[in-house]
Image 1 (tube, rainbow, N blue to C red):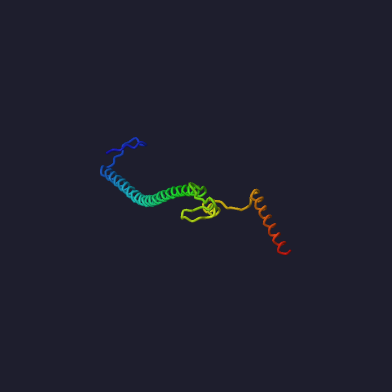
Image 2: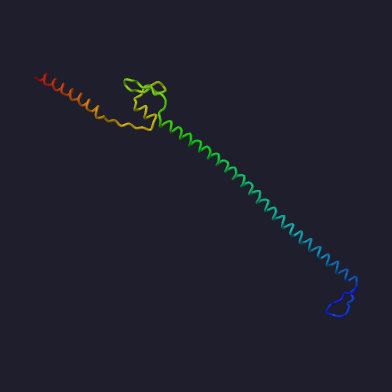
Length: 164
């Protein structure tokens, strides 16, 4: 086989056995290099793949835990809203007295659900957000003071009659 070298004008003769050996050695080197590179990267990729699979499994566990926590929080939020609504309704019921109220026409006591008669003030205080303070209106004050003055006058006359 003749190989032409460009810098020279002549032909160089190389024996076929040397060329074949060189080609086989080059092929073997390329094959070994390719196989070594393949095995090296395969080992490296397997190790990375194991790391990635472990990280993915951990992320899945955390994702499932977070999804479960989110579902729990949504349920708690729904329960909280329902409870708030129930409490609002209960508060409205407590603040307003509804329906028929059995009251004595003479003494103004109120009969409760158990059948007991309560003072008007205590019944309303128990069933509504009300605190009572007592005072006397001007009309009643005139009546009471007139009666009180009449009572005092009678008492003074009795004292005078008893001493005199």
